[in-house]
Amino acid sequence: MTAEEEHAGKIVACPGCNGKFQIPPLPAGPAKSAQTNATSANQAAQGQRGGWAEEDHANVNFFVSLAFGVVISALFLVAMIPLLGSTPQEPKFGDLFLRRGWVNYAEVFLFIWGCAILVMKWKKTKRQRRSMLLDIVPGKLGSEINSHTVGGFIDHIYKLPHRLRDSLMVNRIRKGMELFEKRNNNGEVATFLSAQSDIDANRITGSYTLLKVFLWAIPILGFIGTVQGLSQAVSSLSAGSSDPEALKASINNLTSGLGVAFDTTLLGLILSMIMSFPMAVMQKEEEEMLTEIDAFCTEKLLPKLNDSKNATDDLLLSQAENIPAFAASLSRAHEVFLVKLQDASTILRDAGETLKTRLDAHQTKVEGTFQHAVDKLTSETRDAFILPAAQLNEYFASLSKGVESLNSTLKQLGGETITIKKKGLFSR
Image (tube, rainbow, N blue to C red; front, top):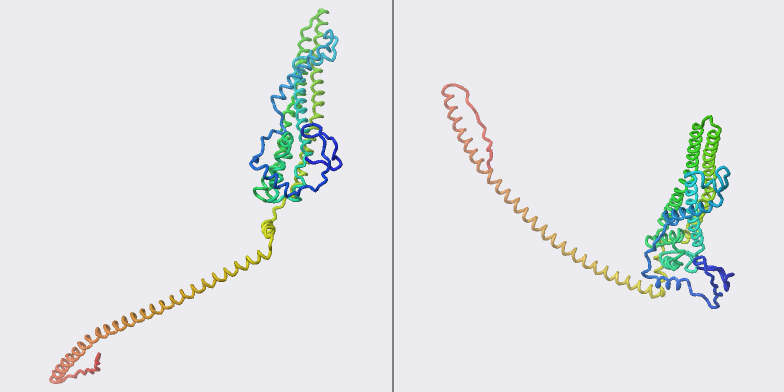
């Protein structure tokens, strides 16, 4: 926790334990640097992460509130005994609660139970208000929260008083910082905080469900008592007779029944109206508290988060304490790179020459094989056509002889002769 400078040396009350203590005076020497404090806190809190058991800060314990309602209702009704009238015909204030039947008992019980719930919620809200006084994001740990300083801020939260750190505000900020430590993304943290705000708002709204049921049930019980009293009055009137004494008793019963009818409705309306005011005030108080927590997260926490992508470059520059040594190391690395590149170029050149020699030898072998195949094909083709040409020449010679023999026969017979011209087909 932190204190203002004007409180130095004074005795103040602790919001965590309600105890009195004295704030030490301002130190004379210079304070430690923020980075040193963050490093020490980080080393001291190693292995202490994992959160803590969180209670429901909006809803009260059902059975505890019920027990309070039963006990206080019984004590209240007992306290009304001295305020009873001497006779039912002379009612006093106590008769309104004790002589109007079970309906008034139920109305009193629901009213006191609802008031017990409101008191318990008020105590929770008071503790939430105290936790908002904590310096959750102290400026001494750094002006911004980045990937290197977020650990110190989280460790600071874990060192807060146990009684106050389990609160809506501290829990939300702790979870947001732990998400930032893992993801290092402002957008995701903003989305998470918004979703957590909706969860807290819905939880607080739901905590008033039982109280709203009480506000609805108390007047309804009053109307039930009215119907019951009217029914009693009508039945007593119908039982009357001509006897004056009996008629007088019937009128007394009628008056008693109407008293029950109107008193139950009156009590129900008064109790529901009385409970509605503190309920509205408490609901407004919790909504304002959530609004202040949302405003703190939006205006104080999110602007301090820094997920800049240049953080790595800044870290490298911060670690490079000797710029000339860094430049010399870079120059040596460049020389080694050039040597390796020259060796790789030589290997590639030798591989290219070897490949060219192999390609030339392969081309020569292919050309020789192809030429041999062509010569062999030409020789075989020529031999295949010479033999049939000689046979054709012999055929034409035989044919010529046959034609000459035919001509000689035709001459003898006096007919025309046939002429065949030989052109030497397939002759060489």
